[in-house]
Image 1 (cartoon, helix red, strand yellow):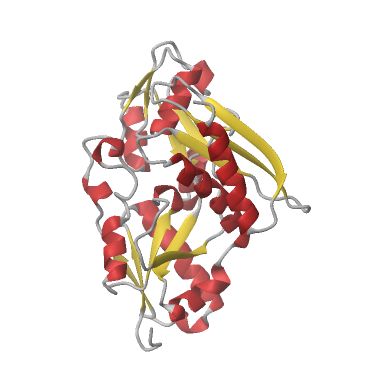
Image 2 (cartoon, rainbow, N blue to C red):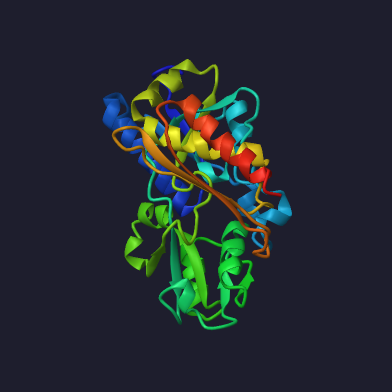
Length: 308
């Protein structure tokens, strides 16, 4: 990439995707003063299949990849230089020639709870209606509260909260990370701890995808990469790969930030969409490199598969 050409960053056009892209742009400008010049960075918005499908759950339309395919096509065609993705939307296998070369510091991975009739999930009245498009959230909710009704609920943060206030549903859940990045954390009513609602794999992590042979863009991204986030995401996505996870399978996993000795906790879960068949594993281990992180995730997947 010649320096007289702008760095073209591809992204979805949703408010959250654009906020995450601005995070990358700001981080790059801080590390590379020449990128502060007007026109040095060009943000290219791309409409994906996941954006167009609003009438049904994504699990019914093909699952993971619906928010990435068109953006990855633009990357492969050299229409953009890099792409910003929410890592929880990324399939475990990328198109040939593309890699995630950079991960921004991970935001809070937990889920936030919103309701008009309760402060917590357990306080919801019997047969209350919870809106979510996530099979993971649906399964965990129904495992804990089989009396509740869960309905498919799509749309951005504003749309979902408006539907909640209009009484279309009694409760909904949103990722804390997204609310923080949209500067809307003041709206959070309560946060569900991982012991109650284990997060999606890589929730809160933003990855930057590039062409593997584009050494210039990789070099630009190096100073804004977060190795701790890479460790955590590597472990969680290794679990997902073993489970052959897609949007059609309720799966969850979380690795904590390593302490000063490299010790982490890793929790993983699988279930059926109706809340039955919940299986969990939990480990306390030392993880000091990507190989150990990958092995931890794979071990969790293997152990859960044995619990069939």
